[in-house]
Image 1 (spheres, rainbow, N blue to C red):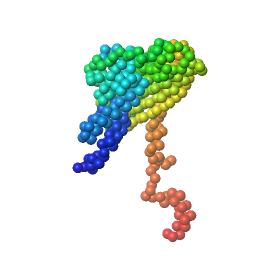
Image 2 (cartoon, rainbow, N blue to C red):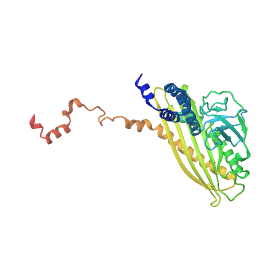
Image 3 (cartoon, helix red, strand yellow):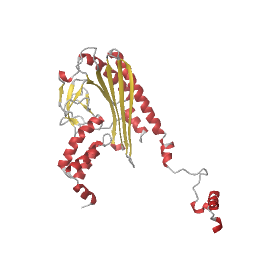
Image 4 (cartoon, rainbow, N blue to C red):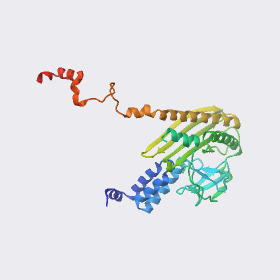
Length: 342
């Protein structure tokens, strides 16, 4: 028995599950299936493996906001904590449909459309975010979806704001992330029927590139909370942006960047609010992406250069074999009284 096998055998099943979950949850975008395959080979215990993936995959899918297509291609559902209705059921408010998801297979039901989510940093960011290049392979489409119930949908008053914002966000995403997906949900106050009460909408945007044959994967995820405060007649905006990139050709380079921002606008009509909020999102996301591209394009002249040992001003290596040629050495010897001892 090798040392690694002996170490694994000494762990309890609970410890093995926790370790396996850690590796699964920290898988780069689009790579959890590959990590799961390797974990299965290492564990050599199907029960422990199934327990680990059953816990990790739902968390991973929601964190990475994977997207699945409905059977009739009428729309897409984004797997997230905001669209979650039940353990394996997720709402798409745009089509008023609920999809049942097999988290481990990352498909709708037992058969389905595989998740869309399934150049070293600057190039990868540009490709996966702005060009939206995606090389996932399609699978069969199942029929495991149902119409949403009335209690699962927002009131007509909230839907006016949600639909108006959704329409503007779709236009923005189609321009900025051609292969990206987006959705707008009501996080609080979905039963509000008329003006006078507060409510909250959430916009999520997800764009990914999954291209393991080219040794790179990447994703862009942003979540925007909009709190509509009726009394103050203001809409407070909080955004959280996450960028992940993995380049592994003849090496292993990863980027995991996060950014948070705040803004606000006036509480107006649904259409006017939608335009103002989309403008805020566009401004902050463009500004952050540009800062990332500038930062990583300067890496060779800044960070990477600082990692190397700099040459002296003479642009030559220090001659450790003949230090007597430097006056500094003679001065030290003189001050220490070493010259007289020669």
